[in-house]
Image (tube, rainbow, N blue to C red; front, side, top):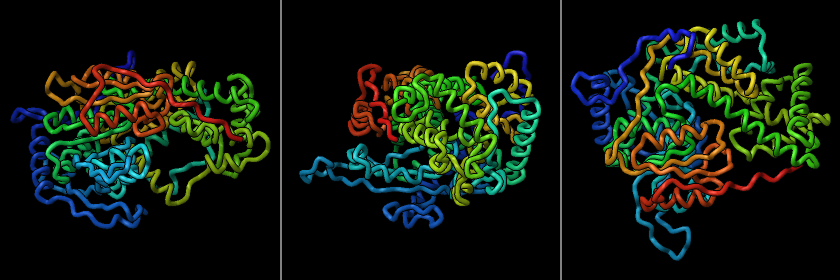
Length: 521
């Protein structure tokens, strides 16, 4: 990653490749992965009750897989990853008592980085997943760092939610200095709490962990579905272990171009969220009769800004300020299912009833704060460790001041989220250049919504170009993040055909969008 006119100040680069040549980059890690996978295959996974602290339903069974903290030292410190599973039903959801043959395990990563997949096997209870759940053991896991898998922490969870807070789209120099100081303190907290282990929480080790979990499950080859960040994890696995891939689904794709990991990707995300925010405002304006927030996007923007100004003067419930409002509406940029709820809350607040907004944007419980702090710590560690970042705040300031002129909605919030990477103390990895040639990898399925803001569509096109034999299915004119197994029957048809029969469209294809959400009020 280079920024014109700005210094990156690279930290030392750790060896990162898969390794194939003796003594080549990543060769020690490749040997260590093979050792760990061999041990895991011999040990298997003893499934039983899930950890009480995770409050998982009894239908889920859990076990652990042991992996090296540092794959270059497979006999050194070990950590345990928690894995969850629901066995294939082997029963056709169409009825008739037809027995469905098993196809092994489908392993899923929901993204983040920092999200847990332990709940994923419960997807088999949802109608859209029942045919897949008949054929596959559904397997989720908590990646390294995500509780209860050697959890990371960077600060006291009680201090994680600082509310209420302002959310200026044109922050002052004093505000920038304050947030930079907080980011530096956060990075310091990560280093102090995790110690030398911090350097080992990154995407390449996440991909190696995936290989060890595959072996522990007794699978000769991996069937994997990743959403969002899980697509980047899957892409790295495909580069490192192509012969171990059976089937792979990439849903809502992180752009794997090594020049974009992660600084440039975040700039592109901020720009994409502006378009998504515009879509949301247009939808609210179309339903002015329900919400009374304005019959044009400009008037809806005025209503939003009025609410933000009121919250700055008097936070709702003492906890919801402009930053909490922005965070709640940012989530609506991910999932349009949130649109009616957010519009209803904004409308109610401006009419004098703050409770719906407090319910949707207020401070979480103590347990929720602990989980959110852990998730944010893993997100930060993985992204900061994965690649070089600008170490001079002037670079961030210049790039994002320019961007915020045309994309003010998410730009500065994205900066404050990622700014600890400017002050990171652990060594950085060199991102892999993911590319597979003809015949190196089985055919894979790429899913993407054309207007996805969290992982802009160009990322799906880029991964499609880089993985030979992959096929892209696009949900046109839609922006929900994560499309497989959701509300679009056409997308789900392609997902089922691939996972159940190994069948892909002959060429890239598209599906009509899901219906827009219905207003409520």
